[in-house]
Amino acid sequence: MTYGQQPGGRRPNGQEPYGMAPQYGMYGAPQNGAGTMYNGAGGAYNVQPTYVTERAEHVSMTRAYGEMTIALVLTGLVAIVTQMTHLYERFIEATGMLGVWLPMIVEVGIAIYLGMRVMNMKSSTARVWFYVYAALMGFSLSVIFSAYSITTIGYAFLISAVFYLALTMFGLTTKANMLKAGPVLVIGLIVLIVTQVVLMFVAPSNTMLKVVAAIGIVLFAGMTIYDAQFTKRVFAQYASQGPEMIKRVSILCALNLYLDFVNMFLYILQLLGLSRD
Figure 1: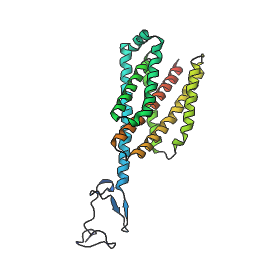
Figure 2 (figure 1 turned 120 degrees about the horizontal axis):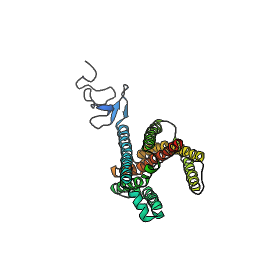
Figure 3 (figure 1 turned 120 degrees about the vertical axis):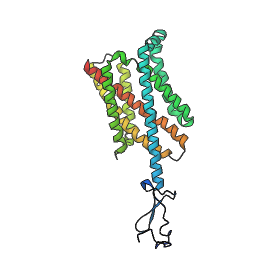
Figure 4 (figure 1 turned 30 degrees about the vertical axis):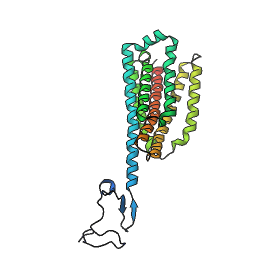
């Protein structure tokens, strides 16, 4: 007679009778919800809380990257429609120089507002603001169709997608803690922004523009790895605070991931465009 078939028998340590042990499903999780597995020595250890936590984090990560993907698709569609209808040109003709700066100012305002208030608003409201931001970004980015060829834009997007995926996988699987590089990345971002503002008032050489574009690619590659690890860490932190909170965190993380991709794409596009000129 095999183990577990002795009727009425009890284990030596006085636990449940043989043949009455909890039934286990996939991943060793007890189907009766007990959350306990027994080792060969009769000891017990808990597995279900770990499994549930990992499952919740996986679902949350999928949600964040899904929100980011939807926003990118929306940005692309709005950019294409805006270019086809010449809406941006008409907007500039009607508003003058104000129209050049107004969309960017509104985008920055929405990004700051979301970053500061997303944890205190309804997740549905945060999602609407995020998609509005993505649509406005598409409206502004429609000008790339006038500055670059479709082929160059296509190559830049493909390279960005592959590069972004590789960096994300690295960030989620590496044991190195990229979160420690946060202050360095912030300083690099500030320096990059200041440099670009200065270049607006001078006539930079082609080589200088290439260097700035290359630095931007490296910087946002680091930001992509950082935000992948940040997303994983923040979901682990808020995993027990309910689905509504997870939805809010998803929007915040999706915004960060979205900005990483868009900026990397723009710098790769600039570098390819300069190389082809």
